[in-house]
Length: 255
Ligand SMILES: C[S@@+](CC[C@H](N)C(=O)[O-])C[C@H]1O[C@@H](n2cnc3c(N)ncnc32)[C@H](O)[C@@H]1O
Image (cartoon, rainbow, N blue to C red; front, top):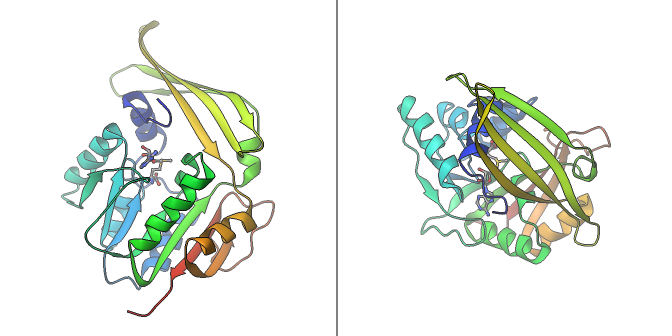
């Protein structure tokens, strides 16, 4: 139930963040950071393919995995519509495994913060490291801590093509300031002609990180040459106004 991304969450993701809906200069940032990759690139937590598909269309060789079957089914359908056939697997950050290695691993839009435990996050960073070729790069976007600590609740809605209305109420149920973790209740509802047809509750956990803390975690996992950037301006140190903070590090060793 935790960070499950079931069928209504996947539908809302598609309505709210359709293929190609990127934020600021996110797409040009990733295209430019990945332009020198010759081998495969991995996007863990690939979701509906929002970013994967524009990267494939730009000629990059990207594969993805996701824990959620509903998100993967949407990704697969969007790829098929565009005659794209990337490798997509149902796996988890915590135990994914490939026989081959990647030139880069990318984790956009704060997906890494879905890992709620520090020790588990560190072991996932090591797993990313071990799946890179020597000199391969890990690029991770994290939401600034303030965005997660914000305690406001929200309600949003989206009309669907078949005349239904999907609503999402988010309520923050608990904050653990020691573990740096927020748990929210995401209540998804599907309405038709004023009647409630379906409801799903997801417990949604996000962990916030300090900038220095995350750099140290990447170093502990074996990464070198770590560059931290604000709002996808590579090499520009982050400040309090940045909407996203990116960490890029390299697996040591030469090919
Ligand atoms: C915020 S979405 C990001 C989707 C996509 N990367 C993007 O940029 O739009 C996070 C994704 O991570 C997936 N996810 C959540 N927990 C996961 C886990 N433990 N292992 C793998 N994927 C997970 C979710 O199913 C969801 O598709």
